[in-house]
Length: 313
Image (cartoon, rainbow, N blue to C red; front, side):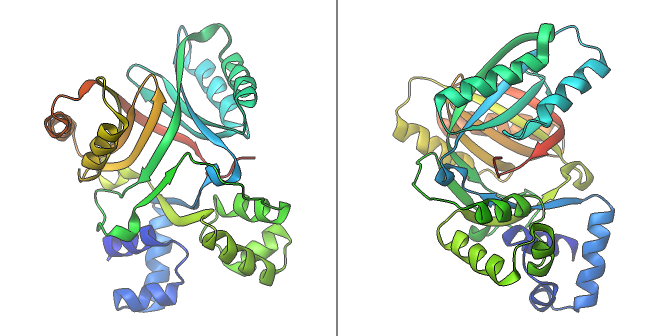
């Protein structure tokens, strides 16, 4: 039941309990109990909306940071300061080449430079090294332990469109970014926006492609999996070849997220595997499928996700 329920939530986390009950051939009461259980156990940490930030005029930059000579309390303070910056959409603590990886939203190169400077300043004398990449295309694939269907996959590119969002839209998007399962009435109470306006604007934002879906954030470790990030550099390959390699990675059952980037790396793969042996097999398979196009693969072990938000502020 839990896997089927999680799979349905991964398709659309805003499905009402009555719809979920009908699809899973059970009662609304059972669904309500199962949802509460998954949330209380920390398996489901939150529900978020996938928002196409590029259509709102933002570019996504990934920053990779290496620290030096930090005590645990000092590192916590640095992470907290970065986490509290409103322009940061994603932040993880990891081991490998880098200690932390984060996502910065910015509308212009000048704005990115300013935000990067602020971020690096938080590290002060503890900054040993850093680099960054620019997101070109993102594919949200699926959790490996859930049932895979085409309607769970979402792709967004860096091509920007001139969508003029209102303050009402931004308020709704900001709320849905961490409360995607809240009812229209609950959203109205939180945002102070009339329910009928919220209902209409959500439909409009979905039709425009601003809201691309609603997902549960699942603690993969509690499902028996370890989270790794593979940072891949290619040999001298064309854009078409990179697209083929990205499509090939999409066929891997353990791949959760595919990000094509420009800069130090060419491809980032979020993968969920049960152990290091499965990771080794996956990396070997990627090299085999790409037929010598891969130059290097750096492995980052993700220990904690401090922040995720698809809505820039």
